[in-house]
Length: 212
Image (tube, rainbow, N blue to C red; front, side, top):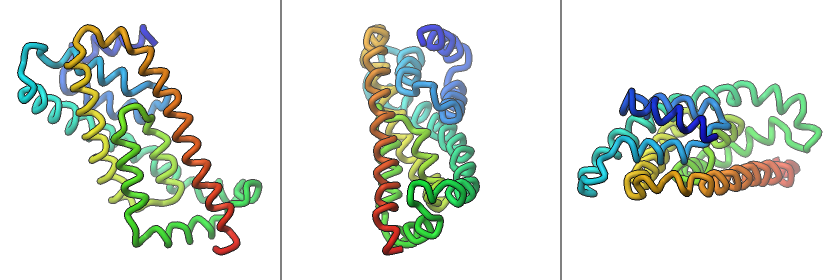
């Protein structure tokens, strides 16, 4: 992991803000890349430690929040559409083994149509810096959240997430490298948490299938 961060460090130095867009795009597609340490590292190398908070915030907001979130949102659509169109045959073939039917998912989707629970869930999971984000695209595609709403709340959540991470990199300066291992550990537990949330939602479908 240290070697990966070193390579990304030079990539960031060489390409500047463009690197943030590309990293946002790639890290969504390659789920095992830890996003938090990478963007914290970028926050250190792309900001001036002597600048005022206002100047740094504006720089981070546009370079990380807007550019990075745009790349992340674009990459997330790739994962989302795989499960949006591929989830149905998967459920039709294997859903019976866990008690989940495609009809149940469609009715669950219909029940959620007039609420904002799924949209704000996407926003929250995207915005919290320590949580992994690829699983969000998987689940959103599987339960067929509308593509427009998925993209909007993914982008808004990513803006918050990446802005925070960029500011952390600026605030901690060179000391960022001393707590990267701790962040990786927290993100690992975050992955477990998101998986548990997905399983809980599937369990909800299982328990409610008779009412469907």
